[in-house]
Image (cartoon, rainbow, N blue to C red; front, side, top):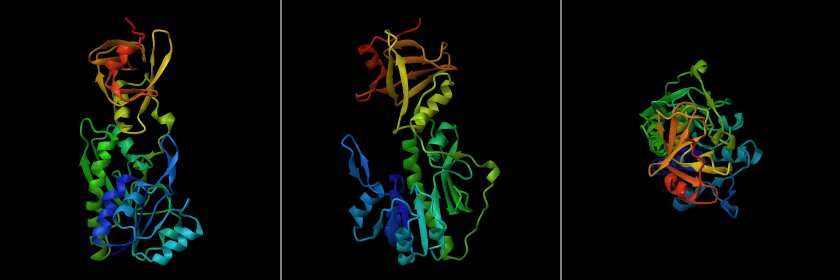
Length: 311
């Protein structure tokens, strides 16, 4: 099939590779290069880097918005049969949805209608879901509201992080897409209307969503920490003996159900780590990252700082 792919994040790389190997890739639509890193140098999206490495001859367009006339004209000139999007990060206008001759499909990293929106993988883990998966759906003008063609689900591991789940779903996506495209080649694939009453919606994760509120239950906070790994990572503060609030990122923690104390207070420091009280139970901090420093075990950090331990 003649296919146009739209994607930005590295979760879409296995799908891009599948399309290059099994179909005629007409072009790739991705977001512009953005400043990144300490020196704010321009960095290309992961999808662009992969395309330039493997197939630099494939046309690529990086509009600030897919609603711009030049983006719409470019897609129409390529005349794809199918347009496939995954983690593109932009809502397509009606003109692009109608450009392919067969369908405009989105690969969404959740089992719809649960976790529509920008951060489905993080929401899946933070919610304590038992399964995740990918949905192949017809794109509509709403946010992940289109009819579903098929879904593939996988179980969530006990210590799953957003990073590990993202890798699994990235590998699952081309498997599901292949089945969906086969249905198109055989005729009209099924269309299942989503039950909108069951929908949940996620949003882009900012600093506010990364903050740890120690008054919440330890179970919820441990899930949140895993949901924010490897990036942007959960952000919290520990209290020094001087009363100073020490900012840290938390990369791992273990639930201590029998811990009791004022939320945010440090209950114990030993070779196992720093134990912090939560609204219910406590968290034994594992890998943390003090501001301006690298990752370290919380026990090593505690040896170099005088923390306010509540006895």
